[in-house]
Image (cartoon, rainbow, N blue to C red):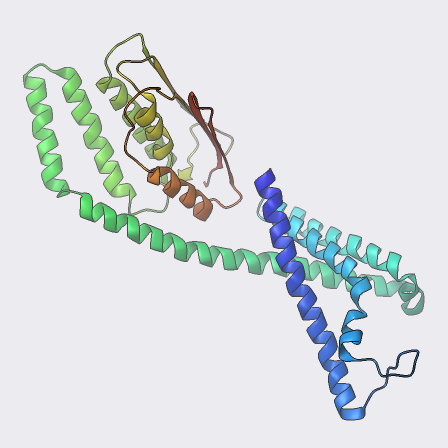
Length: 348
């Protein structure tokens, strides 16, 4: 919530400053042109001509209304645009125009008396149209910006993957050979682990080229990963691993490998063969929203695991690019435990 309010205030400040400068420019230029061509026509009480700076500052009383209208426009864009039905968004734009005109009338009631009640409609429609067009233009700008950043990010990911990966055909053939060998040697756990790893690698190689994949495929990948982790861990009372993956069965789409860094981080830093440890992973999908909760104890007095949380940082960056204003991420480190809570609105 604090992040959302901070973003709202930042956007409002920038928007207001731009509009303020635009108003001054479009007010000042005609006045200076008139003075240059025909001479001064507005004078101070002492008889001196009104300067351009004085003329520009004369609108400072109206800036309160401008600030209010800009704020309402930002609220409509951030909280209504593409969040609710299009009619609700239009109603929000109209509401911003009506409230702003009411403020203008409170400052200048004589305007309505001089121009008549029908003059109310025109400024309200202008302000409504501005809020409507502004939201669409800014959304288009951000979409283009995100698409470019995403293409760069995806190119970098593919480049790193190409540098690191073995020939896929050779690798899958090798895994199939090991799987068959494990079955012959009556090592079912080893065979199961190889089979899970093979499925995961196929999905990884396929998914890195896509912006969005089927959520059911992503959840299957997560289940394979969790099962593989439990296969490799010894059965000890000191190691507690609890997992839950539940979906409502609807056909959603999600960015591939988006959840893995948060889950992988729990097993990387939360598992110990010597000390009591606990890892809990929950993925619940319902009503167009995904909830991921990951908990792990932080093992004390252990050798540091090398890493700089690059996976987490990249995941957060992808969330910002692909799901702006459509996700909520909380990460808490108490010193003895680490918890991640992610809520994500899904695409259909």
